[in-house]
Image 1 (cartoon, helix red, strand yellow):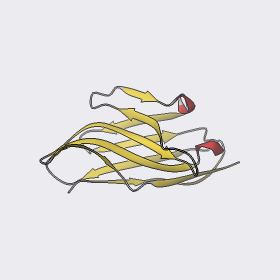
Image 2 (cartoon, one colour; image 1 turned 90 degrees about the vertical axis):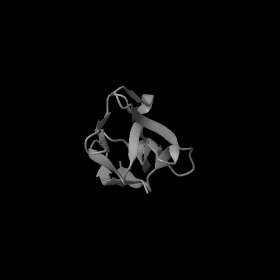
Image 3 (cartoon, one colour; image 1 turned 135 degrees about the horizontal axis):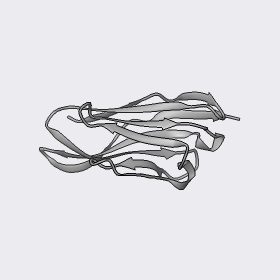
Length: 119
C-alpha cells in the first residue's frame, strides 16, 4: 500500500523559513506529478506548488519568489522550501502525488503537517 508522509512543519516567526519533506513509501508504483496543497482554518484547500516528473514547476501567485518546490525521483520524495514566511501562510500543508499502481492511477494525499507563522 502506498503512503505519503510529510514532515518539517512547525512554528516559526514571520520572515523565517521552514522546509517540508514528503516521502512516498510502498512498492510497485510510479510517480507522476507531486505537489503541495494547504488549507487554512475556514478556507478552501489551495494548491501551493506542483512539480511534474520532468521537473516543470508551477506556484500559487501568493508564494512565488518565496517558496521553492523540488523533488528527488530516486528517493521518491518532494520538498517545499518556504522562505520569508508570513502569518497568512499558516495552514495545514498536504503532500499530493499522482501515482500509477497495480490498481490504477490515482491521486494520493498525506496526513498533513501544521505550519504556523507568528507575526
